[in-house]
Image (cartoon, rainbow, N blue to C red):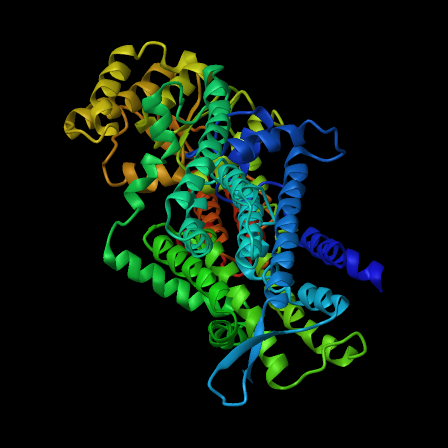
Length: 637
């Protein structure tokens, strides 16, 4: 029994890690997965804020000669981060259980009843019961939907969860200590520096920390001196982490986002200036994000645990007030900040809110145990069996929604797209979420179709991207110095938030785009992404040079100067779409469907009916529930 008590946390976390493996992605997935994996393996500079600690740890891990692809190895590292975060959350829950005050005894101190003293009585369990109870309840947050999802693929939020959980554990530990030594606060300073060295939203824990700090140290000269000592440790350590990014940028790696080689560029990259346009954009946007958060919160905890959490808010403030204040500050501050970030994939920004609410679920369970006088002891197997239903319910409900174990859609799509581009071809696109980010990994790490030059049309609007172009594709822009210098000169005041000439900026940008096509047409096959065609070109925001046109070719559109028939590589496309659609699979299916339909219509235009029929058969195979486009079906009759 003692042995089981001692290692119960590790056994619970082993169980968590095993379950995580069943839902882990085998390859790259949506959004930043491919880019971040490539940044780790190549020791590059990722998108703002650069994530130096995440990059360094991933790079060192990628050097281990494991019998997996690099992306699978890094996905495993991700699940290890989230499992370790779960370990410290379980340890925190133990502290909450051990310090839960369930009632007070009023004791008469003299016969005259002149003085009444209140004595607190704690929620008492033996060590085994406490460990087992903490382990069972500790499964609830790790298997909440967004928390669990962070374990499935490469993302900075996995390490963020670990560092956040470490900070929470030591803050709560300090909260319950009677005497706090300076070393405890210095440890918090180190953990905060590591957190900021990975993700800047670590600052969301600071208001809660401030409450704990001043409730323990009070407002005094001595307390502010301690803060000074913490900062003397915090800033040098944080500086070291980001100096790693700076010195690596000086070496001009293959992925050098932001090119932070001087203070101006470094600060712009560190603060994520290019994303600030979505911060505090409008009250309506904040209302919409808040409605999404509140609507999503019950499902994060499979509804039943959410109700228990609501009970826990009452119980927490009644029986564990100080801890509940800390938890509430973290919840409210995180929620208020995150609803003001107007992006689609906002869930991960609410992680601290979800963790905080998870702690109230702990208090709710403890309250119900006390209220109904449930016997929690090693002999009360029935009650422990009943408690295990709570996390098992979440596992059952959330498994399919977080399961990425069969997610090959993004790798299939990216490889299919690249394999149908001519040798040394140029692709102009901005499909970041399901192509460009993924191509970073396949090209830079697995060396798949490295000959293809992929240009992110939207990143061409950033000054640092021309350094990366010069580093990776110098031949494409070698004769465009006038246009590029004119654009960079017009861009400088914009990036410095000064007055700028938007017409001049757009003139040079359009000139660069045009020159990429005209200067390279005779040396490279040039392709346009479908999103580029459907938006900027169709809306006349970008006009192809005179005499040029587009034809459907593979999953892209090839630039051509004549009306002769242009053959395409095999149009037989096989992409393993997931059984359950999300917004990304719906978009990708639509892209593939339209691309194949347009190619089939192109073949019909040149009387290649057999080829058109083969493409039509491919469409039916990929989209059995959708069928053929009516115009295509009529043309094939």
